[in-house]
Length: 379
Image (cartoon, rainbow, N blue to C red; front, top):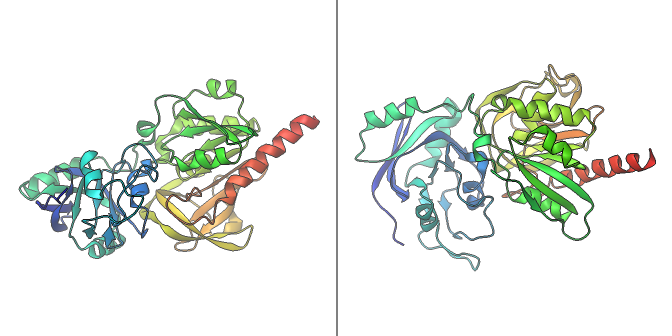
């Protein structure tokens, strides 16, 4: 399919404009403009529900060179509000490819733009912070587009997670012998997370974010997985209360990304909006327990407020200790409860896309469930 070379522009809420040509569907796309530093994995980025409500800029200059396929998606359809690239490959080349990026975006109604200086855009966001923006055809008046941008909701205070959650319960069977039953709260879960649990012998029941606590208890899970997701964690109040109740009942809990923020808030921590977030597959994180560095995959705009030092712990949450730190800006990347079998990390250990340095965390979760089972049998 030929590219739609319609003149198109990206406008930011501070008035900065970038002109290029259309990519994907034709129309106006509104959202928070962020950048992702991954060199590959654009299909996983497009289908990551954590990007709901965002216009994603890929900093790598050539995107789409290996096309798209049915195996690399993290959800059934793209989740991004819009897509921004320097250059989109016209002809994909890969034995796995089933179509081009252009066709994929058109088929799913995703508005994009190419041909802009993504380096200048990234530097602007780093200096000024993530901000609302819009992709629009050139014939749409700039004043009208800016008016729509300023009326668009900010990410702060937005509960987007419940909007992307599944509307029905479904199950992923364990591969091989079933060892444990895990209930996964879907706040925007990526397909790889329950898949990695299933590979480790877990039957995974994925439930809507709004599932009542009584239903969770009736399922008698061996462990709870709190998924990634978009939006402001402070807006998901009911889930925070349920997480605390389940944790105090002794159920092992593992959270990632938004799940990390919800677990931290459940025990008294605060969360706050980062200037431009962490988005990419190359973020260095220091594991304080192992005294090693992990290269991680990240996608979040909020963080848990830490103390002056890791030893100082988390303000307002004395029961939590810091386990991981971001080596870019020192933000909290992991916590663990001092007594209960509860831990979480800010990044994406399922690594889709990204390195596999952090997949040991799934094994740690299984060890916690195994320990609980052994204690129950010996009681």
